[in-house]
Length: 297
Image (cartoon, rainbow, N blue to C red; front, side, top):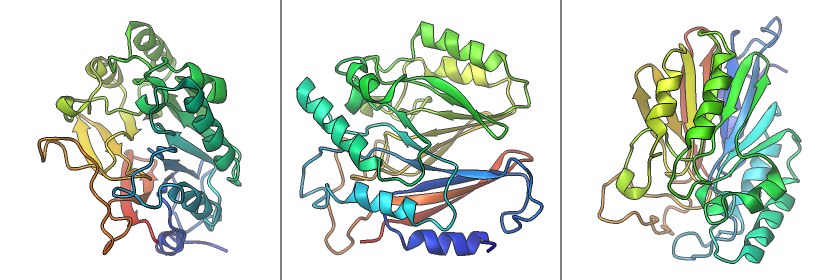
C-alpha cells in the first residue's frame, strides 16, 4: 500500500520515542511504483544516555529508549538501517559500570526489528578510556559504508579527550573523500558539531574546520550530528549541518544562559524538548525537507 509523506508523518507520530528518519530518493515519496532503485530511508537516534538518573530532568529515564524502539518497530515502512549518533550511555568513572551500561544498551536495542544498526560513540561513552569499552561492544569509532549510491562517513570526535579528530583521522578522512567524485552524494555522521557552535559549552570540534575544509570541494555533502540535545541548522558554505534532539533530556539554546544545564522536566508538558523528525531529500540538488515531531507520552 503506498504511503505518502503526510500519512507517514501521522503514523510515525503515534509511536512516541525520539526518532529521526531520513529518506533519500530521486523519485516522489508517494510513488513507490517505478521509483528509482536507490530510494531508501534510515532512522537516527541520538543521545540516549542510558544509565542517567535525575527525576527532576527525566523521571522516565528508563522508559524513553524502549519507547523509541517501539516507535521505530511500528513504522509503517521499515528503514533500511538505523544509526545511533553517540552518547549511547551516560558517563561514569567506573570502567565496570561503563561496560555494564553498554551491555544493557546493546541488549535493549537488540529488540529493533531492523538488524542493520550502526553506532557512533559519544564523549559520555568514550572520552575517559579513548573508546576502549565502546569498541569492545560496537567496533570501530570511525568507518565508511555505502548504501544505494549514498556514501556515508562516520567521524570520531569524542575518543580524543581534547575533542579533536586528530591528524591521523583527518588523513584517513581525506583519503576516503579522495576516492569519491566531486558530485558524489555524501552523508557525514559525527557526534559533536564540526563547526564552532558554542566552544565554551564544548559544542565544537577543535580541528573541525579542517574536516569542513576537506569537504568543501564536494557539492553534495550533509552532516548529521547529536551532542547538543536540540534542533539546530547551520551552513558552512554549501554544507548543511543538522543536529538531532536527545532521547533523554533537552539542553538550552547555545549560550542562552550562564551554564549548560539540562532543562528541567515540565509535568504540564512531559517530554518537552524531546522528539523525532522525518527528513526527506530530493536526490537532485541535495535539498532536505525536515519535519520535527514531539515525543508522545
